[in-house]
Image 1 (cartoon, helix red, strand yellow):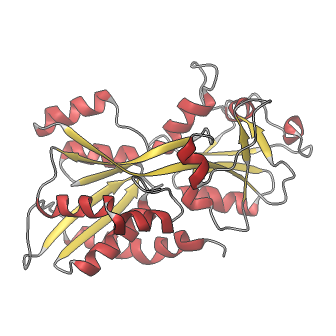
Image 2: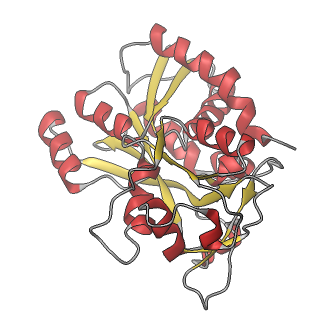
Length: 298
């Protein structure tokens, strides 16, 4: 089923939520039954479709609450916490100590962190590409610019089109720290890497280009027959592993991470209700449906 649920939410839900964000410009963290209340959610593009699905389901059960969800990257969401323009930041990377201190200084309260799901970062190529497996060292060499031709990793004699997320993305930072710098903490993305502002743009380029390679959250790659998810080896002698719920939970898949929600201080009122619902059975079932991995459930 090409695109799966992910492709459904982008055009339909996000337009509605962008409209809601214009109508509900002021954040409100209180409210109760019978009072119109809005929740602003900003941040990770990896999580934006997941956030949209949570919001739709929550508003169905609480029609007095509007939830506005926008993306832009994890850095955008974290910055919005500091300037008071969001109630919740969605992030596909952990917040830094420097960011925590900046927010605490600006808002007068500490950042509160919630793990709302798990994700395996999928490395994807076009199905016409004969390469099925890469090691972490090969990925580091590709993304640092030391390998630029597919023949060097068992593919055809073709120049690679190497795609990454832009610098505001939590996935960009996570992949740099855990893959690009696999055995050399001084490495950066290579000059040949093409940085894109959205995960969807990366998967569409790979789907149409047999020379392309990209990395995306698992929810963007699952159930698409126009992408091939590569198996990854920790080293040349290790087993080749696909990102799945089982391999991410067990730690077998090496490019895995938590997905976070952040608030300034302890959430209150309907914001607390919303986060509690996300972490509960209904919210976590939506995590599963969108091909991420629920937390606190086997």
